[in-house]
Image (cartoon, rainbow, N blue to C red; front, side):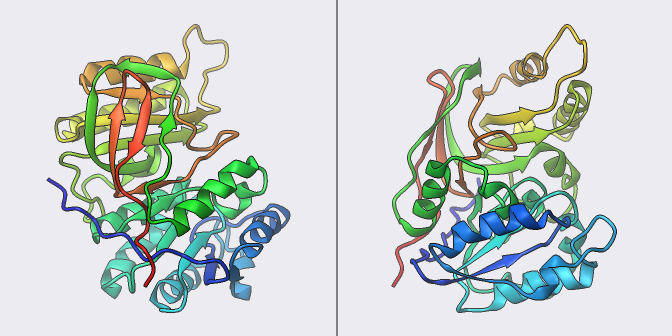
Length: 305
């Protein structure tokens, strides 16, 4: 069984928060739109290096690692927001591990490639927030931003999320782990994957054709993942259709889910789609696949002193 993870302290309005770019370079206009929303609530800070580019990355590994570790180590920074996913966070993991402790407990917010950092946080006993990156935040519905702020500030569990599909009926409880399916599979067999026994897995992805989803899912099956977890919640899989195919990605995922026999519901508003509702990774949840609900039994944060 996974040990119960300790939530970081709640964030308060006007607290200092850091904005970092640990993965890909990004579009400046969408970044500024998300930054404005964060700044309306907190005091967001970022260094000039956040805009650097090195090939497909937001600067070289040393720059991105230094920015991340500085934000995590600063005791006055109450939350860390990621500018974009894309690719690059996995390149930092080995040196993050060598650096030792993640620093004082605090909220890390992001998704997609940031899944690598979430899994590292959960492997170190921390809860983190799977939620919008800054370049996505400005184009999401206002209630999603409000849910994010509530998640960061309230020591009460967030409202449940509702999906649209039942692949396998049943009810399961456990800590919620996962994020982007592609990134998750890349960490199998590494020391950065947290213990999965008894977990509820959350998966989402973008731009992966059905046969690639099948290949990644089969990798999980062959690695024994589905014999260790209790349930599966599927978010959005955007841009994952095969052109002119007679089948859909939902049908492929449904067949794969049914083969596991685990309670599984899909269509949760999480991922690269038009809505990306934030949720706490590492916190305990109840998945009711028959009712297509994901109920949070723990908050993302603890009450501030």
